[in-house]
Amino acid sequence: MQTAVAIVAVTTAGRALAGVLAYLRSPSLPGGFLFAITNPDGYAEWKDVPVPFAGVLELAGSAQWYGDPNNPKVGCPVSIPAAENITLRCGPSLANPQDILLPAVVPFKKPLRVPTREQVCLGRTTQQGLRITTAQFGEMPWWGACWAWLTPEDRASAAAQLLAHGDTICLIQVALKGWALYDEPNQFYSADKFPPITQTLAQTVALCQEAMDLGFDAVWLFLDGDDGNNGYPVAIEQTNALGPLLGELNQCVLQIPGWDGVFYGYDPVSKISDFAAQARAAGAIYVGLEHSTGHIPLGEGPTDFTPTGRMAGYDMILGEFDGTTHGDSTWQILARMAQPYVRPPDQPNGDDPPPVSNYLSAGSPRGPFYYRIFEYLIYQYVRGMSDADVATETAYLQTCSPEQVIC
Image (cartoon, rainbow, N blue to C red; front, side, top):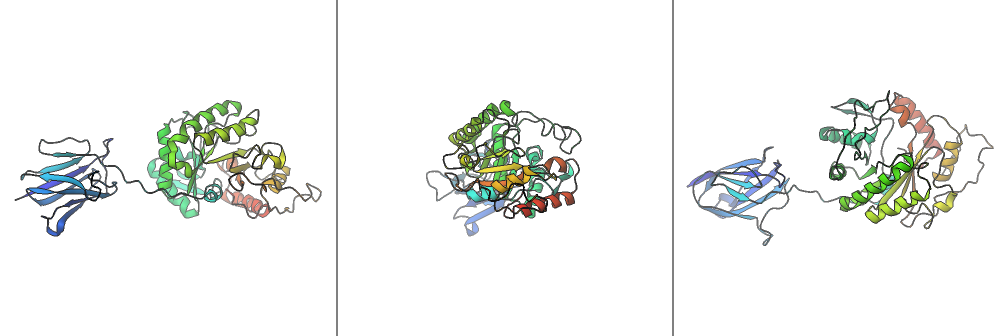
């Protein structure tokens, strides 16, 4: 006798899992097994299963290994005594009396690709001068802080475009405080399109995991601490909560307390050092800081950037610049933080004559300090600056610091 046997694959949260490779194995089956793949409802069916049946159910594909925990070499035992249409219900779902209830499936988790410190801190990310197309917003003057505001489909599409462009870093601004992304008018990311949203800590961690699954090497995670002294306790609270939840993802995530309102912003500046220490105590492995225009942290020159200096807890420094306005806030910063430095033709001969100290030469306790030319035209680009004008300024900065991987 034969009967139809179906499978419904559902997680403990009740989510149907498509793409599960289901094997019904028994010596009584022709070839030893029957095979099926679940559809978007988590459903698949075998038409002709000989009964009585005694065998095992094995799952693969989008599900983790499934079977008898006491015997990892075999699947989950299944016994079908009579010729009734049977459904093997893996996880919580509506059942008929004859159905067989089995443990829920667990989605397959790809092995974590652990990047090197250099990949985390020196990977490529484009934050001005690139256009990305999404279903929600059409063509966007790309600024990666919008990541949490995109749909899963648009994040996947944006990731494919960014990776094709050569980016390896996913920048994510957390959305834990119920704020709009960028609450200023007359720019692309205004609050009417990117309104206040509130995500949970778990959703934030999930965004980081998703970014890694989409193919990025690492995540730069900006916290909500960008409000001077008011932002400091927010950044501390968030790093304390996120560090333990990120777990092994800390190997892939660089935490940054906020944007250019952190330095200058936190007073006294010892709070800058305190943030790095607290982030690491909570689990962070990589910590970064953005400085505002013309302000090298923390004000004491190269002594801040030694294995015992006040910036020793940081791995990467991000620089903000004056856009197309060239002056000492560009030249003197790059000469000290982004060597080798090539004096541009418009820098006066008597301005900041060499030799100039390389502030980062001593290194941190974990290896080199990394410096990145980061925010130089984001403000203008989201307000309509052309790609060509961004490219011109990028080329100027690249000439000044030829070994920089410019953001």
